[in-house]
Amino acid sequence: MIPTALIAIGSNLGDRAAHLRTATSALRTLPESRLVAVSPVFETAPIGPVAQGPYLNAAAALQTTLGPRALLGALLAIERAAGRERREGERWGPRTLDLDLLIYENLIVNEPGLTLPHPRLHERAFVLEPLSHIAAAAVIPGKNLTIVAALAALRSPAP
Image (cartoon, helix red, strand yellow):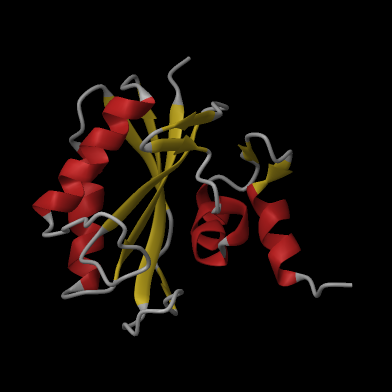
């Protein structure tokens, strides 16, 4: 069985829709990989302390025999090709393209530069909403929650 990776796609600088299209086109051409689903696109408010414009967000499911570290390297190369500059210690700022490796099969990894599943996946509606359209029943490793259950938990009022 070929492993499936779930990837978040986001942009809030420049031609946001074009950046998302570029990302999905690049995912289609990754070696040892097959893009099996892309979610609808959602516009969302930014999070964090930096003033910036709204994001366009989507998600993709990719079957791949690339390992998680190689896949992450490929995602970072796609970001760089779209003009993304990552700076040490910079978080939550505006970006031309953001590709996050969210889940790689059922792996739990905590290594420098690679954490799976994404550590805040279950807390981010802007990621869970697109994922719910392509991988609703996927289980977040280590959380024992499906994508739709995690999204429902975020939407329900606290007791």
